[in-house]
Amino acid sequence: MSHETTAAGKRFQITPVRLLVGGILLLGLIVTFLRFTQGLGAVTNLDHNTPWGLWITFDLLCGVALAAGGFVTSAAVYIFGLNKYHSAVRPAVLTGFLGYALVVLALTYDVGIPWRLPYPFLVQPGPSSFLFEVGLCVALYLTVLFLEISPAGLEWLGKSRLRKIVVKMTLVLTILGVVLSTLHQSSLGGLYLIVPSKLHPLWYSSYLPLEFFVSSIVAGLSMVIFEGALSYRFLGHKMDREHIQHKDDLAIGFAKAGSLVLAGYFFIQLTGLAADNDWSYLGTGYGAWYILEMGGFVALPCLLFALGAREKNVRLIRWTAVLAVLGIVLNRFNVSLVAFNWHLASDQRYFPSWMEFVISIFLVTLGVLAYTFVVTRMPVLYEHPEYAEE
Image (cartoon, rainbow, N blue to C red; front, side, top):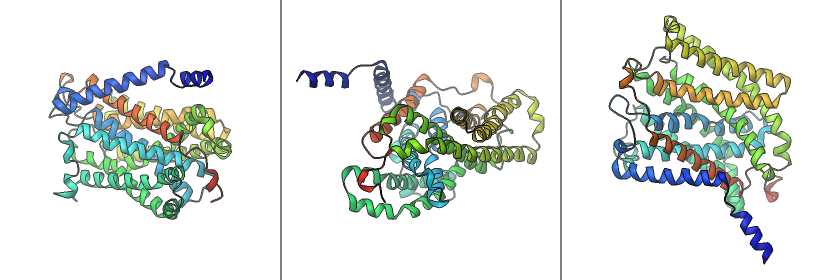
């Protein structure tokens, strides 16, 4: 009895991390209550000049890009036949599913009347609108991700027959996921094609849809490397031999791909710059910021990924993945906030309220908790022994 009491005490021990998480959740719930009872004006600094702020930039644009690891890893394994990366599929797909689920949740905060989110699909479809296409693809892809990760839950629940049906659909779901991701990742960039007078010329380009799609591949590859490192550090006891054995090979292989894709992304950016003849802007303050983005967060990680892959330096690759992820986040912030409405005076520019930051941190915390809950209970970082031979 005393042993059980001691074990229970350790299990529910209050730690600084748990206090921090509890504080974030409590504060997030308070701001959520204010948002849905008093409206957007009570918790945000949005206005008619800037109707899309931090929540769209971070929770949607960054969230969708950083959740691209699901379709990138699935395509690598099931379409291109790189079976040595099979152990990374479920963690990547789970992250993608949770990421897209949080994107949809974040939209309920940002949309003025959230219960009308299904309105464009059911009442008045707008097939000529980028937003309609993005919304439809995100809804469909979220469904695809749910089906792709469902075998882990079905194995946990012991539903072998239903699992067998879903597994047979793997290739179809993977192809559908790649198609839907290509469409909505590029369309997020296409949204900004309609604001040439508001977006700074260094970031405005007719290649924006292509830039968003290619950079999402970089984000997906980098996030898989980064998440793999964190999972091994904090959840290594849940990993089986295959996951541990291939974790370095995965980092090296994805670093090679990341270097190539970053090089292509850099070339696309320069092509857009040359096509619009925007070289003169490089001598301005915005030009210095653009050079920092391209040099420090595109060219540099491209070279470091290549160096890390050649030298098989996994530590360098993991830190470079962090740098690449920050670069994608920086690009989305530049397009949506920093370089948007660039002609306005500083006192007219939008800056998020502290409550907008709280909600973004709150949603990220929910995602981390959900990921931890799933991987500590379901066969995500290891193969279920009853299905290991399949």
